[in-house]
Amino acid sequence: MSALGALNDTAFVLFGQKVIWSDMIGNLLGLTALALGWRRSRLTWPAQLLAGLVLVAAYHSANLSGGVGKQLLVIAVAVWGWRQWRAGAAAGEDGTIAVRFATGRERLALLAGTVAGTVAVGTLFTVFPDLSWSPWADAYIFVGTIAAMVAQARGLVEFWFAWLLVDLVGVPLAFSSGLVFSGLVYLVYLVLVLWGMRAWWLRTRRTPAPAQPAHTVEGAVV
Image (cartoon, rainbow, N blue to C red; front, top):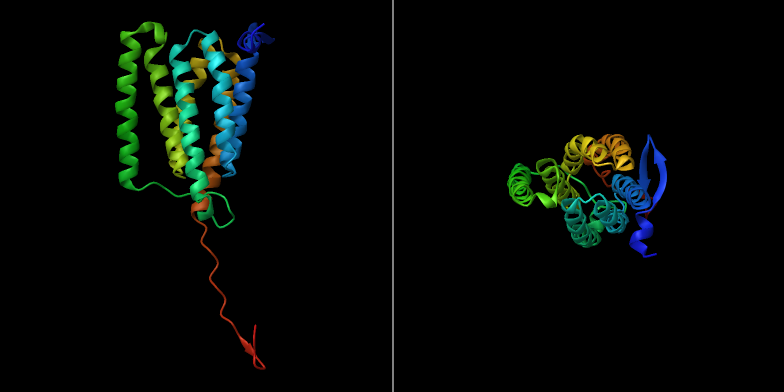
């Protein structure tokens, strides 16, 4: 049996629907990646890369070619994001990535890129229906995921808002696609996203402690 065939075997049955190994493992890796992102750890990127590799098999089994394409793009962005965080990790006071809110121009660019990308991908999926049975929802998740990862790579708090909007569509789409475990994991994502959003938000409000002036005592500097 091939590795791909083994990944697409049934792991267990949940609510009368089969949960395949690739769906379960890929989404658990995705949860791990999100939790590591919450902690601003660079390990979030290799975890996302592995999740993307495994989820390619899950989407392939569900005949969601658009989902396969999304995961391939996720893998590419994960490699780029990993490099971005490796270059910028020293900016954080504790060795982790420094986070901030996006500027008005950055928000506008993210929004415009997401809208334009969704229209383009949704049109492509509509013209070629074999790519996705739910073209606009799939396009929205496809582009929204990439936008979220780009914001994450830049250390922007808006990354969490983007994930929240993706989850609102991802939950019903996963259940209707027969990927039950993905749907349940998306619900857990919602909780992690809200916690992560709060953690990064509070992180932006922290300022370094002011340097204490030196005092001279009996000719010694302390």
